Length: 442
Ligand SMILES: [Zn+2]
Image (cartoon, rainbow, N blue to C red):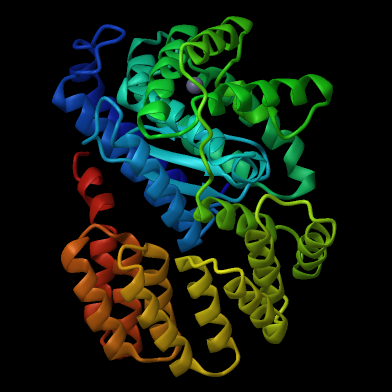
C-alpha cells in the first residue's frame, strides 16, 4: 500500500501512550466541550493523516482551485457552526464514489463524485454542514474513546488503511481493496444518535449560512433512491452515514417549519463542478463530454460548461480552442478568479510566460483573497524559472499564512532552483515540522 507502515507503527505507539489520559474525561452526548488534551491529540492525529494524504496519497486531488473553493464554502459554513474557531481544512479526493468524510481534527475530505453529483450548491453545503457537525460535536473522538472494540490507535490505522484501500485504482486489486474498505468503513459508521445530532446541527448551519435548508434532505433522498435502483457510486457515503426512514422524516419535519426561499448557486460552485467533471477520463473523452453537454444544452450555466470545455481543451493541448472558449465566456459577462487562472495558464502554454504572469497580477488585484490565483502565480513563476521572484512572492505570503503547506513547498522549490540546497532542506524540514513534533512524543 502507499502509506508507510513505519509511520503507522510510530503513530500507534504514540496514540496508545496518550489514550488512557483522554479516555476518562469523555463529555456527554450533546456537550461539545471537551478536555484540552484529547482535542489537541485529535488535532495532531488529523494533521498526521493529512500530511500522509497530501504527500503520499495518489487519490489526493492536488488542484488549487477546487481546494480553495471547498475551503471558502466550508469556512462560510464553519463560521456559523457552534464552534467557529475549531479550524477546519477541506480537501478534494479524486474518486467518483459519492462520499465525504470527516477525519480527526477537522480535516474533511470531499470526493470528486460528490461535487459532480450535487445538483445545487445547497446540496453540497448540506453534506459539508453535516460533516462539520460530526467534528464540532467531537463524534469521532467520542465514538472511538467510548467504543469497546476500537481505540484511537486502531482508528488512525483504519483511517489510513481505508484511504490506502480506496486509492488502489487497478481493477485486479479493486475487489479485495473495496471489501477491506467496506469492512473498515462499516466499523467507522457513526451511531444513530450521532447521525441525528449531525443532521440537526447541519440543518441549522445550512440555514444560518444562507443556503436552501432543503438541500440536505433532497440530496440524501436522491442518494438513497439511486442506491435502491442499482448498486453504484452512491453507496460509499451511506455506508458511513446510515440513512434511516426516521432521519429522512426528521429532515422533512424540520424543513416544513422554514419558509421556502430560492438560493442561487455561486459562479464558483458551477465552475468547480465543471472543472472536476472535465478532469475525468482522457483529455479527448473530456472534450467530447463537455462539448456534448454544450451541444445538447444540458446545463444550468452556459459559462460553466464553456469553462469545463476550455479546461478539457487545455488538457488536450488545444491552446487556441481553449482560448476561444474563455473569450466566449468573457462575452457572457461572467468574471471569476478561476477564469483568469485558466486564461493565464493558456497564455503561458502558448509560450508567453510574461503575458500569463501579467494576467495573474491583474487578477490578484481584482480577487486578492483567492488562493487558487496565488498558488497559480507562484507555480507560474517557478515554471518560468524566475526563482528570485518566486521566493520573494512566497515569503511575502507566508507572512500572513505561516502554516500554508503549498507555500512552504514552493519556497523549497525556489531554493532548489537557486541552487541553495541547505536552504532548500531547511524549507522542506519546515513542511515536515508537524510530523517531527508528533513523533517526538515516542
Ligand atoms: Zn453522518
